[in-house]
Every structure is written in C-alpha cells, then in structure tokens.
Amino acid sequence: MKLVDIYNFLDALSPFELQEKWDNSGLLVGDMSREVKRVVLSIDVDEALIESLEEDTLLITHHPLIFGGLKQLEFSKYPANLLEKMIQKSISNIAMHTNFDQTHLNEYVSKEVLGYDIAYKDGFVAYLNVNESFELFSKKVARAFGLTHIKCVQCSDYVKVAALTTGSGASLMRSIDADCFLTGDIKYHDAMEASSLKLSMIDIGHYESERFFGEILLKHLKNLGLEVIISPSKNPFIYI
Image 1 (tube, rainbow, N blue to C red):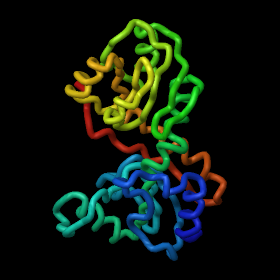
Image 2 (image 1 turned 90 degrees about the horizontal axis):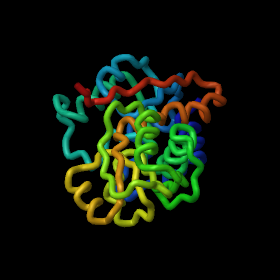
Image 3 (image 1 turned 90 degrees about the vertical axis):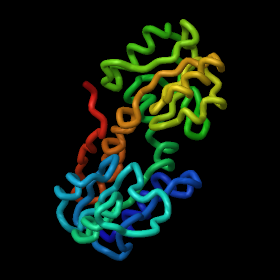
C-alpha cells in the first residue's frame, strides 16, 4: 500500500486540520508515493526503536519528532541523529498528536481506562460524572494508570464532576468547570494556581496517560491488510 493511501485513511479517521497551531502532526519523514510494507505504532521515536525497525517501515507516532523549524541537521544531536537513521533505512513517519487527542485518546481513556461515561466534551477536555469522594476517586485513578504514588492538589472532599486532558494540560486549568482536573506534567506553580482556584488536581502522568495510543489506532488499522504492530515506547523517566 502506498503511503498516501494510509495518510488519507488516517486523515479521515482523525483530521489533521484539527491539530493546534503550534503542533506538527502529519507526514514528517517520507514520500507519499512510496510503498509501505509494514506499520509500527509508538508514542515516541527513540534510537532503540529505529534500530529494531526493518527498512520501508511506516512509523506512526503520537508525538512529532520535529516540532519547530529545523535550522540545521547536525547528526550528533537530537533530533537529527534519529532522522539520519530513519532516512538511511527508508523509515517514514506520520505523527498524530493534538488531532488524535481530540478525536480518540481522551474519550478512550475516559471510558476504557477510567471507566466513566463522558458527560460532554469541550475541545481537549472530557468531563466525567464521578460523584465519589476524593479519596476513593484518587485511588481508582492511581490503579487505572498503574501509579504507585500520585501527586494531588485536594481542594474538596467530594468530586461530582471531573475533567480529563491526557498528556500535559495544566495550562487549561482556568477554563476548567469541574471539581477535579486530571492531567499530566503538573508543576509546582500549577498546583499553587489550582489551589487558589479551588480546583483539585491529580497528576496522571504524561506517558502514563498517553501510552494507549497504539492500542487505539491498531483497532482501526488492522483491516488495511498490512502488518501492523505496537512497539511500546519507553518512558524516559524511572521511578525509584
């Protein structure tokens, strides 16, 4: 199958035009006219993953390897070091980032991972009817994401409505209309601001909340007649 056919399939599934202005989803490496022999799904691109891939593989990632404009390609530095290896092995790359967050990822995590129905969605934010104590809800969240410890900002004892944004969504907190906001990468000053807003927060981790990307997309791609596999991206953090 040609790369352009897969690109068009993905665009119909989760339109690239939905991505944020600062994002860089779409075709990042490759030639639309090239034939693709197999597809690999991963959150990110790293050196070990590239080394494991066969030639003429299409790598579909959640996070774009190229975010801003590249002013140089110095192959000893990131991300040029990875791009060089990808080009040498004819590895193509399509990123599905903020467009996929809106169309699939937040909904899947809400329903399939956390087990709550979505009351309504507002862009990157899914609102969930919880109606549980903060203690019970936080423990359920920790189990769902496999978190031994979680960072919380607790402003009330009860959660009627929770908001969810996978990845890093703390910048949205001023627009959140809920008792508790679930997102990743919560910083110290985010916590201070949340406290002043009386908004409870639970840090669900960036990697931990987005690691379901591959299994979601696999269900849609497996009917294309291509070899499609998930290559679990390695979390760059370790917890001791």
